[in-house]
Amino acid sequence: MSEQHATGERLYRTVRLIRRFEERCIELVHSGEIAGGIHPYIGQEAIAAGVCAALRPGDYITSTHRGHGHVLAKGADPAAMLAELAGRATGLNKGRGGSMHAADVSLGILGANGIVGAGAPIAAGAAWAAARADDGRIAVSFFGDGAVSQGVVLESFNLAALWKLPVLFVCENNGYASTLTVDDAVAGTIVGRAAAFGIPAVRVDGTDPEAVLAAAGEYADRARSGTGPALLECGAYRFDAHHTWEHKSFVRYRTKEEVDEGRSRDPVLIQGERVAPEVRERVDREVEEVMDSAVRFALGSPKPDPAGALDHLYATGLRPRAGVASHA
Image (tube, rainbow, N blue to C red):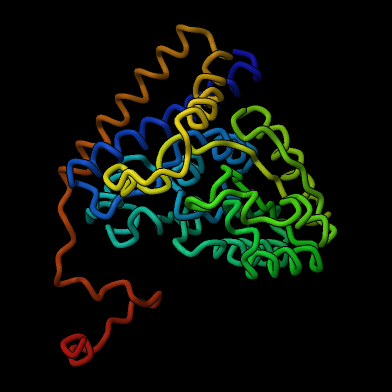
């Protein structure tokens, strides 16, 4: 198999896995197995797949409240991830992180984050540590268009530019911050934010995995060379709800015509057309087997013991005193 075909299949496998993972998660939300709901990543799969394909195993990422795709694309075990969302003790974080805080430090996944824009300074810190160690690692911060006006993101841009940190800022512009449009929320442009700090930036088609990979690969190489940070704005469209609570609330902020138009650029179909039909059928079958196994594992796993609720509060393993626990 040629390198080009191998890359095409790899990208298709990733976008297909993310799509089916999210669809199965939505089913489990509706059945009550995943409490609290999720923020579906459906429609944005090309961004996670393309960016993470440009990374090395030791590189770092920080994610968002809509982070399942990033975590999976960086190599997390789908079964452990699904168990985490279902609040099981076998989850990535023993059922304590849930949908918005999943992490796997062994894979460089420093965590999803429920606070808008909060991953940017964490990624900048990881990049600073990598630069100090001179170990060739880089960090990636994923965030949405709603985060570009958060002060902590702009502060991260500033320090990254001043210190020439090996960090790639990836803005997933899906057109909405919850229900607020970009046009109503962002003055100027997103790439212009980076330009103000002297950070190279480009907007790419975030529905095309190969276009994202090409741009991310170029900027990742640049970061590794010691030249400093860059920003990648990936334009895409969120096919599903901002959060699954919308499935019951029926809030209306987009027309059917708009959603239909957005769905016309489907990352899974775009990348699927680039692989041979027999390869696509095989990958689809393999992904379905992975997801069937993940669901069985997650739902068959035990829930955390309430007696251990105060475990893992401190990195040192220190446990609160019994008196403090009973008072709480």
